[in-house]
Image (cartoon, rainbow, N blue to C red; front, side, top):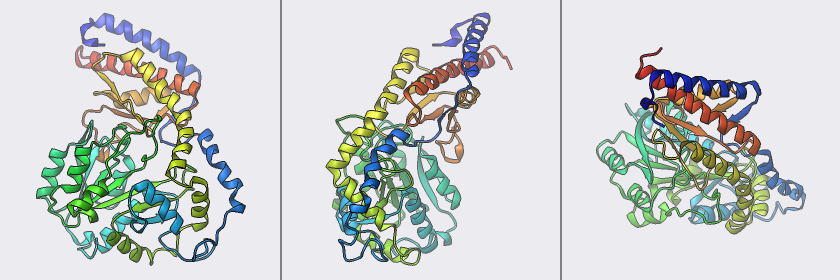
Amino acid sequence: MDYKSFSKPELEALLAEEQKRFKKYVKEGRNVDMTRGRPSKEQLEIAMPMLKDAANYDYSAEAADARNYGALGGTKACKVLFAEIFGVKPEEVFVGDGSSLDLMYTLVHFAKQFGVLGGTPWNSLKKVKFICPAPGYDRHFSICQQFGIEMITVQMKEDGPDMDVVEALVREDDTIKGIWCVPKYSNPTGIVFSDSVVERLATMKTAAADFRIFWDNAYVVHSLYDTDDHLKNIFDVARKAGTINRIYSFASTSKITFAGSGISAIAASEENIKDINAKMFFKCINANKVNQVMHVNFLKNLDNIKKIMAQHAALLRPKFELFDRKFTEAFDGDRFVKWSRPRGGYFISVDVKSCAKRIVELAATAGVKFTAAGATFPYKLDDLNSNIRVAPSVPSLEEMEFAVDVMISAIRQARMEHVLKKVFGEN
């Protein structure tokens, strides 16, 4: 709705009516947390058979007994499992503990301290920059801030980052050492990188020889529907282009089994994996191989993982569809309110120009919490004050309905307040 078409008295009356409706939500005293993409309790129950059967698993099937020291880069069976997920060879996999974010942080740390494949340590350089497609994952940006890496914001389009801009930047500037990517069901927009974007990332000319693509494939098996969305295998492209060392890919079981208590992995060239192992040797003896054996026995293979993920999808899909249905009813045809319709992943992206901070603030007064407005941009600087990330996984359907009603009302109020201020000069 274009509130600019109303007179000031008409708009004030509409706002008062919406505020009256909103007070009823506030009085309910609810608490609905939609800040992070956490699995619900019902989802966590899906993996409980793994623990029940744990005593029956064979932990000594490999040369390095899983209950003892050894096998720094993970068990052979676990490497085989992740190789199937990544679409690479087992020799191109390093398996760690529960958090892929920890592995990303570690590889940035290694590059800063020791360099990449014998290259100059980034710490000795005057400046290091990363390209950060936005809206994007706030924890990626936090890693850059932690290490003093300058972030360059590049617009996220419907098929991936704006590659014309990315290619121009990396071609000319050798201080640009990396780019963050969530290529499938991207956080928070839910888009899947097109074949063209994948090919251009793998083949583009870079001024920095040690440039790395941090390919955070967190949602590689997280489709909400029976028909999965295609993501081109970047390793296949990079192999042909001779840029295989450019790729660091990451995944974990955090949203397959137990969040924070699963296993994570890196896929990279054999040369990169050898380099990672050599540096990890001084950091740890090995990851939790007992947990790796448990996971391999429960997950088995990619086909079985897809069956497990169908159970997750059955719990998640109604929440995403409820959101889209209610937003369509409220804002269909409204050019001022845009939202994503992801086919997988854990997030919905909402854009309401100039109003995001106020919407989040209003919703919080009714007990509905979102990640802070601006969090999906480097330095938390959303110049348009437009983007809000919605994480619908934890609330029940009934809680979701309440939360979406609150958000719709908050959007209407924020937009009316904005027009009254900008058009009619109200404070």
